[in-house]
Length: 85
Image (tube, rainbow, N blue to C red):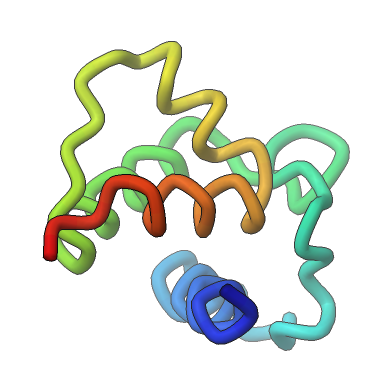
């Protein structure tokens, strides 16, 4: 799980052009949106498409998306629980 969390942090930095950050700057359980990392709805769509493309995940319920993208930890937990083998 720790490897996946680090990988997700690196992917978030690259995907969202947050090059002023390092993976260590992103707290694993901190909110990704609002007061935490400060991402917005466009960032959410980028992350959604990334999970579909790179992890084979499909998120059909928008309410579920909000829960998945709470933090890097919740993203990692969702990937582990739902990734296609």
